[in-house]
Length: 135
Image 1 (cartoon, one colour):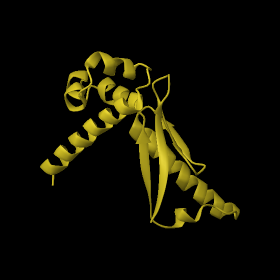
Image 2 (cartoon, helix red, strand yellow):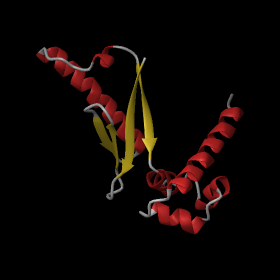
Image 3 (cartoon, one colour):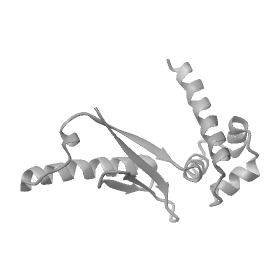
Image 4 (cartoon, one colour):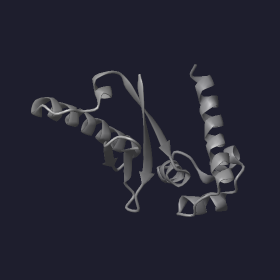
């Protein structure tokens, strides 16, 4: 199975974009899920057009592949806090970073590598807790 690496970013207008690091595919949408769906439909359209027109396309499109998504800290915070899914207080508890600092990361200040890792570790810990509940 081929693994495709893609980046998720939040644009200044509040929409999200997804683009592959080493492939030509991308997508955009009002939410992360819509951006992912847009990229998937672009990939399908590209393959169908290539077959119809008789030109080459990436061979992984014929088999099983997975997309590994990466999102930056600011976009992650904007998405979950902005949607009302999580609060800065909750993220403070899982990351150990105070709310004022998290707010600044949400609004454009780029966290240092160590701080970004604390945020990521907090979300990984939350994911593990949730996975154990639904296992």
